Amino acid sequence: MKKSKAICNQNNCYLFQNCIKEWHPAILQNQKTFRVKKGEVIFREGDKVSGIYFVNSGNVKVHKKWDADKELILRFAKTGAILGHRGIGSDTGYPISATALEAGVICYVDMDFFEATLKVNAEFTYKLMQFFASELCESERKMRNLAHMSVKGRVAESLLLLQKQFGVTDDGFINIDLSRQDLASFSGATYETVFRVINELVNEKLLALSGKSIAIINQTGLSKLTMLEVS
Image (cartoon, rainbow, N blue to C red):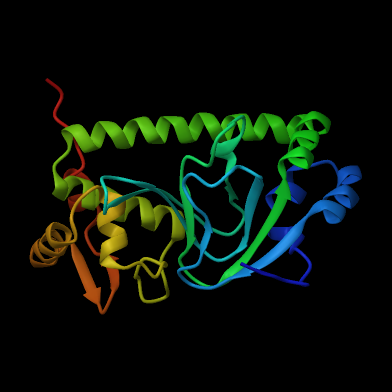
């Protein structure tokens, strides 16, 4: 990553938004800012844990190895999100990787300063605990779906989640530039299977395509595909 002289946009900063104002000068003193290019790795699974990252602008995918040549995307992080927190308390390395989906700005603080921030800012620590709990529930739900939901259902749910997180453009398309391979990795499926499923959903008039862009045109119909049968 290329270090940037740009000052962190405090309106987009997870730290500034959740820490007491008296702590802001300390953040400015300890924070580093980097510019990233599309496809640039922010940190890799197994890298020694050094600190915590924050998305100041842009979109990032958080992913993990799945077999030798595959990856599973655990979540997407957009402007204002925290990265690298899964490495807290680790004596080895980050258990996941983070890669920029587009050009953006990433902020960083080392682990010593982050731990000091937790001790000084009770509200920040509480919100981080809530985030951990939410992320744990989401991970458990994703693992359940991998085991019990059809690929078609998982693709449908992935698209619904992406629309909820990123919204839509003026033309009604999901507002994130995502490759079919990344959609496959997020759905826990192969590229070929996702390509086939997308075409099926278009033929069923649940989706519309324009190049790589996807629009949900029948949200109720798509949602029905994500329902698991209770035995």
